[in-house]
Image (cartoon, rainbow, N blue to C red; front, side):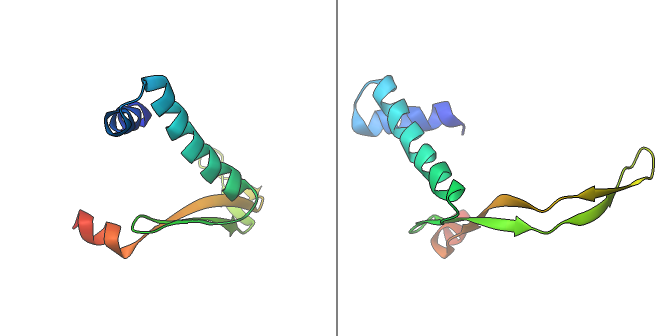
Length: 90
């Protein structure tokens, strides 16, 4: 499923226009992104938890030249699935 599929599902439940359903989906994901940008976490009961993880600086190797390259530290989003979601997928 992609964003358009989510918009269709929200539209079917709410019975609104597609534009309004798309605004709802955009608001949900926009809020998650904004919260993670601030460094906070988003926990959705029964689904999982979105957090920000710090990836340490490291040395990597350019596969083309074999040269060692420094990769700087960076923040990356992380998702941990809730037990209910894991059980549902099994």
